[in-house]
Image 1 (cartoon, rainbow, N blue to C red):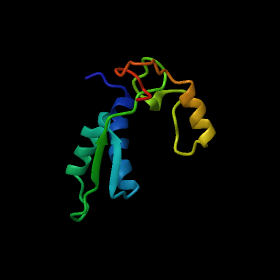
Image 2 (image 1 turned 180 degrees about the horizontal axis):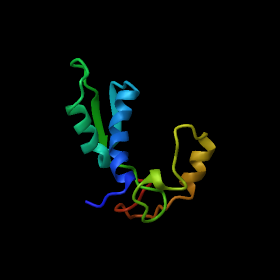
Image 3 (image 1 turned 30 degrees about the horizontal axis):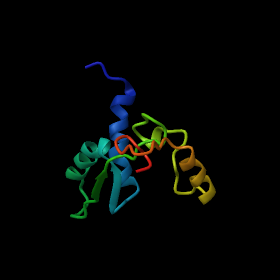
Image 4 (image 1 turned 90 degrees about the vertical axis):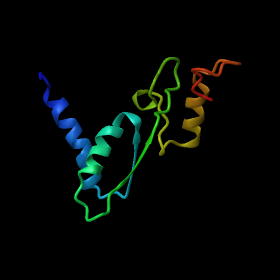
Length: 104
């Protein structure tokens, strides 16, 4: 195998964070599900294993963006209402098109 140090360390860091933070519930994208489930299966937590909730990522607000988390116009929990409204107004939202429409 020819793996970079990032490819070796990142999965370990993903697993470690749920134990370091001592979370009861871990909410994450489907892309991280396997790593988190592996961590849960091997955890030694005195029968108190964290709950893993996996979800699909929200699409970005521009045409063709797959993940909002990688978008420069991502909506964050701490955004003000006016900021969220401005981001949505600039979003790709073609009329009468459902597939690929991030606003729907």
